[in-house]
Image 1 (cartoon, rainbow, N blue to C red):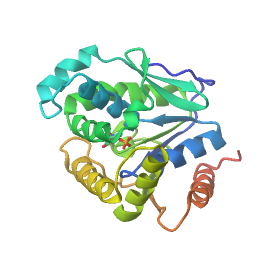
Image 2: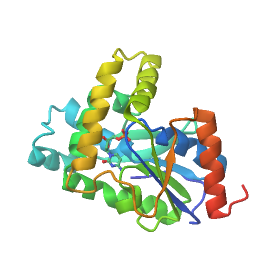
Image 3: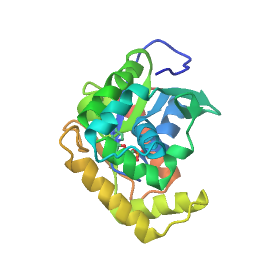
Length: 234
Ligand code: DC
């Protein structure tokens, strides 16, 4: 995996975990930009594997089929238009990995221990050489247990589903609120009940509930929280 970066001097790592649709990716991206940190969306890595399985008719319910396909999967993260681009076997799949049918495949493959192992070193390598904000499910608990700051972002399922629904509609993806809520509940359940690295708040993570805040307010709150905790004057 590669990432075109500006700095090789490691200073800080921030873990931002939370369930589907809590706004953590958007917040992590905005905060990283404001701080001059690299933003790593680890969900995109699981999505890339989910997409590969989807496109190649690989049954995600079969661990061995998914594991056998890992040898054929090369994922790279690149920066383009100030956004993380996801390259799967040489093809930019940044948009395709966001399709709802891929979300469920990503959740399924993420429960397979070998898949998590496959992605673990790649994720850790980023934090060795960069100032990073990494978002995911197990960043504070497994990937970066010694992160300088851990934040767990969440709010009620209905609020998260409404946000995700609005996002999908805006992108022209045809769906209903009920479908989005059901999908979100299933993924929440799968992500927090799998045996390996389940979604949970690390003991030393700070909880931020974004339910009563719009995006701008959540951003301002989270950014000043990070600056205060890390003593940054950016
Ligand atoms: O954050 P997301 O919705 O793009 O993540 C897609 C799936 O990947 C999600 O269902 C859970 C999984 N995931 C994970 O298991 N661990 C991570 N660090 C990030 C995502």
